[in-house]
Length: 73
Image 1 (cartoon, one colour):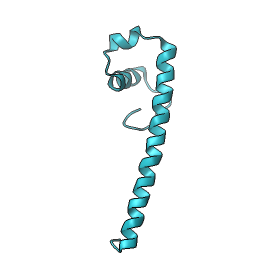
Image 2: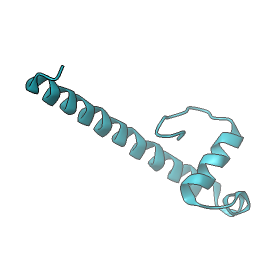
Image 3: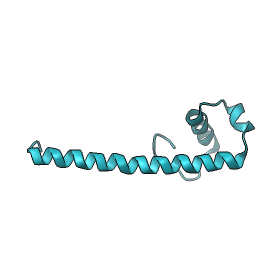
Image 4: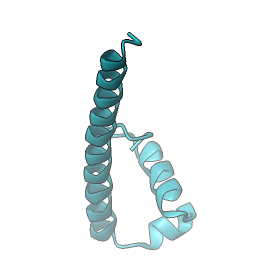
């Protein structure tokens, strides 16, 4: 959540905003969904973000390594 940053125990308003943004739904549509389903989707969403963070960090390291090898740093 929060632009690929994980948040533990977020305020409900932040969580609701992120759910709306992520799933392109209105708050009323989020409220109509089953709470367990939404919780599972949030768990998956956080896991994907964690995986993407690791990939981003790896790509940055590889880019920096390439620059060093070319003598740009």
